Length: 303
Image (cartoon, rainbow, N blue to C red; front, side):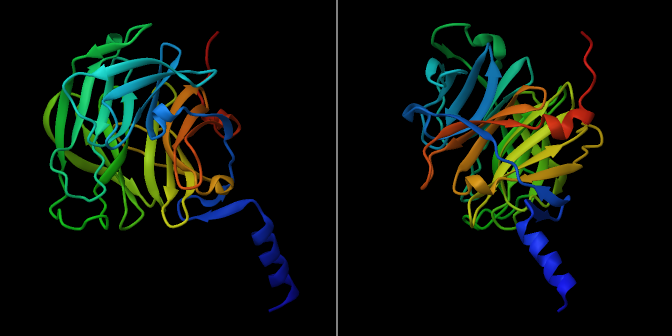
C-alpha cells in the first residue's frame, strides 16, 4: 500500500463524517442541550408544541397524561389526562393543527393485536390549568404482519408517527433488519389496516418523527441499538401523493448512549428533541438547528 492510500485513510478517519448508504457521507451534528427534564417525565417519548408549551408523555406503563412543559425552564406546568384509557405503551404524539393523535403502539415483542391511536380536538387542551378530556380512537393492524411469534427479533414495532393534512403516517422500528417501513392510515376513528407505502434503509431504530406541513419537511430521530448512537434524518419535499423519501442523515456520536425519543418543530429548521433516561444519561431536552442545511429548501415567507 502506497503513501497516497495512507493519506486517504488518515483523511477518512479524521474527517467529521460517517458513511451512510442513503446519502453517501453523513455530517456529524451536535444538538444543543437545553435542560435536564424533571423526574415526572423521565421516560419522555413524544413531543408537540401548542399554546407556547412543549407537550410530552411517558412511554410504557406511564400514566395516561400529556405533560405541558414551560419552554424556558422545561418544568411541568400543566397536565391533560386522557379519560378512561391506559398507557400500555405510548410511543409518540403529533398534531395536524386540528387534532392531537397519541400513539399507543409500542410493540417490542411483536405480539400486540391491540394497537391504537387516541384522537381528540386540539382545542380541548385549555390555555391554562389541568384537564381531563374524552377521546376517540383508531384501532389498527399492520397489513403485512402475519407472524406474531418473533419476540424482539422483528420489524413490527413502532415509535414514530406524524400527520399531514390528509393522513397519518407511521414509521416502523426495525429490530431485525435496521430498516424502516412507512405506513399510511386515515385520520378517522375506527378500525383500520395500516398499509406499507414506502420505506428505506434507516441503518438503525426509528424512535420519533415530526412533519413541517408548510415547508413539507419531515424530520426523524433514532439510534443504532448495538452502540446506542443517535442519528437524525431530514427528508425534503415529502409529499402525500408520491411519498418522497429523499433524505439526508446526520450522525450524533457525541451523544452516544443518549436514547433520543421525541422530536418536534418549533421554528423553520429548528426542533426540540427529547431523550428519556438511559443507562448513561438522565432525561433531557435539546435543540436541533438545521437551518444552514435546509435554508435553500425552505419556502420564501412574505412579510
